[in-house]
Amino acid sequence: MKFNRLVKGGLAAVMAMGMMACSNSNPSGGGTTEPTAQAAFKLGFSGPLTGDASVYGLAVQHAVEIAVEEINDQGGVQFEVNAQDDQADGQAAVTAYNALMDWGMQVSLLTVTSGAGQAVAPNYQKDNIFAITPSASSTAVIFADPENSSGAYGTVFQMCFTDPNQGTASADYLKSHTELGTKVAVIYRSDDNYSSGIYNTFMAEANKVGLEVVSEGAFVEADKDFSVQVKQAADAGADIVFLPIYYQPASQILVEANKQGYKPTFFGCDGMDGILTLENFDTSLAEGLYMITPFSADATDEKTANFVKKYQEKYGDVPNQFAADAYDSVYAIKQALEAGNVTPDMSTDEITAALVKQFTSMKFDGLTGLSMTWAETGEVSKTPKAVVIQNGTYVGVED
Image 1 (cartoon, rainbow, N blue to C red):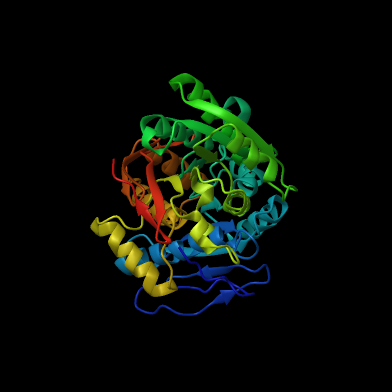
Image 2 (tube, rainbow, N blue to C red; image 1 turned 90 degrees about the horizontal axis):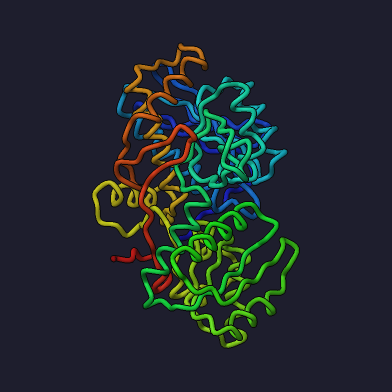
């Protein structure tokens, strides 16, 4: 999946209801998407629109633009969008949040990344603003006490799987697909909540189901040499290497494995999405890599096919799961607003109460799952899928 990099400047605005035009940049590096007709809900979010993690932020931004354009063109619920660039940084996310509140945000997609989301989630509770994040998967985004999964904020929901769910789902998948291998090595980043959270639940489920883990290698953000972890996995005879990490260090591990002549099956989670777009990386090294995902761009259902076609036409890229989750998030908000008879002139307290009520009682069919439901904690329930990289593209795996 290839993603255009955002040049310096603001978010291009999309205007629906017949006339789609005009960019409204602001000094903070974000932008707004405004309808031309009736009153609209002010929908805000922040994400890494520039910098190393922009592959995620741009995917979300682009999908939101498509969803809002479609919805505004339909009449009924209307959205005006303000996207702020937080570069996946917690302090920048707080600054972005303050800018969004000054703008008059009524409902939100929170943030794209977990660290940024963790920094601002308490503010959403304090100010009583409803948010559903497409892709911030850490439990720290929805719980004040993430270690014990307690103290739910109550106003922050997730469209993506939580990190613990990804770890459990990965262990279950590997246990039931022994054709991929039976001896597992894990390489994870110990100083990252995303990675260590998935690792912990993966190991717990692996012990529960009897998955054989023969090697565990940890690293920290500053590490650039993965020769020890790779050799440890190879020496242990691991034929599967589980990588609950983001694609940047994963690419370095694949390079090191190739250097050592080590060829196991590599398996990752949603943070792996983006490895095919990494500059100066030999993507042939990612051939045969598996990952757990809620979305496969090669699915043949009409809804997915239409979204992928429109995304490719507008941006020249194939959408990833972050884009699909963002598209679903906007439509889920639309469904809840309509079902709750919510109007933009209501107070944010009224809007939030109505959205929480709807999200905790409704079912939603989207690109990333059917009959999705949400717990009062904000956690989503939907079925994960697996994809594999073949010939430089993601291909859905049929069970």
